[in-house]
Structures are given as structure tokens and as C-alpha cells.
Image 1 (cartoon, rainbow, N blue to C red):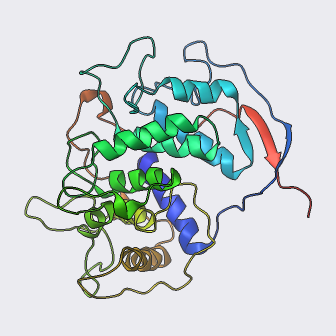
Image 2: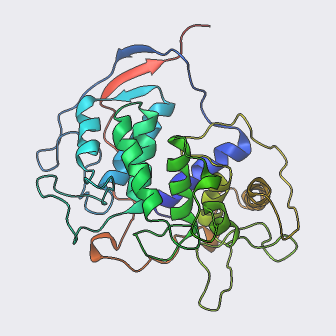
Image 3: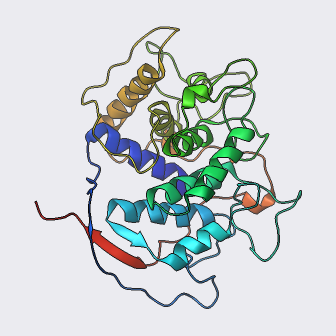
Length: 313
């Protein structure tokens, strides 16, 4: 499973099981170590390996993880992420900031959406986050969703992470519509397998060549978060303990999300390790060679910055 897919799966598990860490309203700062960066990598970048395919993504997830653990990223780490943004508001998977973005630059909706969420969660550079959200809205597909890159076919994972970014920047998801009135929710619901059928409630990553929908655990996890209008740093305040699978052709976004949650809960109960082939990463969408793989290559470096803890109760 790719780091992108596992992030959505873990976040959705928190929604289903109510296992997310609580947030404090007024954390108290204490010191945290700040190791020296690798000489071969840009200062402030998390991870120890080639960032070509996942630099912005892994940096963003590191920030989201730190948020849950009451750690504030260092200024250097935040500045590195902001420096990856193009003037349009978009982010690539990773780029040399000394070279300006141009028509040949391959923009990445997933990296942009993750960076937007990360910047909102650390409560810094809100202008950069808003610019990223504006760019994401500008590249919405006609079916209401998003693919890995502008113009590529919509998929559940990309659409869901973009929804999370828009939601975290206070954009009403139902108002992000195409010319014929389709919304991001429309795109996700089109990938849902109806209740009553095999794997009912699950979501496909993308339709097959003949339009068939094949259940994918990663896509289902992402779609649940998206249809609930949640980002990746999700809490459990509204978690449903016993989601049900509702039949019908005119379901609300929340009903479709609960259908997906029902499928995931049943799958998790049957196979706690999620070893099913359906949990494997979906096929790689057609795109530039610069982002042909998204595999987990490293673990983030130890936190750099300020660790915070909840105030005494």
C-alpha cells in the first residue's frame, strides 16, 4: 500500500473506531530536538531518501502527524513546504525552487491538497493554503472530481484528498460545481457499489474499462472521509459506532459515507490486518514519469520544532 493510500485508511479507521487523538485548545510549549539536516537533502525536508516522487506529500503528512501529537513544525520545515508552491497556487510532487514553474511543470493535485491541509493545521501561511485551494477548484473535472494531475481521469483517492483541502479552507463542498451542476460528492458517489450487491457499500478507485466497479479498500477509506467532508487529520467526535448500509438511488453524501464505513468495518472485523488484495494500491494513473511511483520510501526524521502538550485539567 502506498503512503498516500495508507494515510486515508488510517484516518478512516479513526473515524470508525473513535481512536483519534484529542486536540487541546491552549497547548503549552516545551522544547523538542532539532537534528541537523542531511547534506544531500534540502534543509527542513523530512525523510532521508529521494524526494522526487513524494517530497511535498511526506512533508505534509509529517505536519499532520505532528499536529495530532501536539508538535509545531520548525519554521525551516514550514518554509521549505511553502517554497515548493508555484505562483498558480499549485504544488508539484517535488521541485527545485530555484527554477520557476512553467508550462512544462507537472502539477500534482494530491500534493497540493495535502500541502493545503498541512498549512491549515499548523496555522501558518493561510494565504498559501487559500491559493492552493483556489487552484484546486480551477482544475475540477467535468464529473465533479479530480485525478492525480489536472485533466487526468477522476479517482476516489484524489477527489477525497481535494475535498479535505477545500473543507479545511472553509469552502462549501456542495457549492464547488461544474457547468452541469456536478459536485465532488457526485464524483465519489458514482464510484460506490450499491448495498445489496457483492461488496455493497464499498468504493472503486476508478471505473473499469467497461464501467464496472471493483471494491478497493484504499479508495473506500478515502471516499468515506471525502463524503463526510473531512481532512486527513480527522477527529472522532461524530463517529458512528454501528454504520449501516442503506439501499437507494438518491442517497445523501453522508449516507454513502456510512455505507462505505459499514463495508470497511465489516472488512476490518473479518481481516484486522487488511491483508486482502483489495487493499493493495490501485494501478498507477497515466502521468508524467516524474511521478510514476508513490511507494513508501522512508520514515520521517525525528520532529524538528516545538512539542506542545494539553494544558492541565
